[in-house]
Amino acid sequence: MNAPTVFRQRLLDAIPRLRRYARSLTRESSEADDLTQQALERALAHWRQFDPERDMLVWLLSIAHNAFLDSRRRDARLQFADPLEVQQAQDAEGGAPGTDVGLRMDLLAALARLSPEQREPLVLVCVEQLSYAEVAQVLRIPIGTVMSRVCRARQALRRFLEGPQRHASSLRRVV
Image (cartoon, rainbow, N blue to C red; front, side):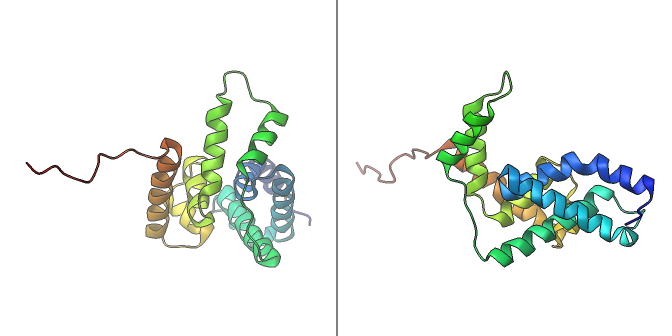
């Protein structure tokens, strides 16, 4: 693993965003750290396969995404975050001054309710600020699929955060 210094520096620069994406996939700090380490190990082991013309972050996110899918297949189960567990974790971590902890908890709970197929592209587009084309590369799906999944995820988040809507009665009074 004698990767060039420039490669290793670019790898180090991408770690915060890689970890943030890993956290969005796993929704647990220790699992995110493990996934980040696994992605970095794979990147270092296969550094010769990296195309310098390609964006390092997109390459790393692809590796992390594939590692996550591998572990999910291996575990053969899907975990959902319990809102009470999210609240306890938030209470334990504390919040930054000026942070609306309630809104943050609601957002985390709403994100947890999304399917991974919707959550992953939404996080990559909205949090990591990747283009739709880059997300399509990371997830290895068509760009149109990325666009529709992000759109559906935004709609679902809006529904989750707004709560139940009260609609006017569907009955009409006939005079």
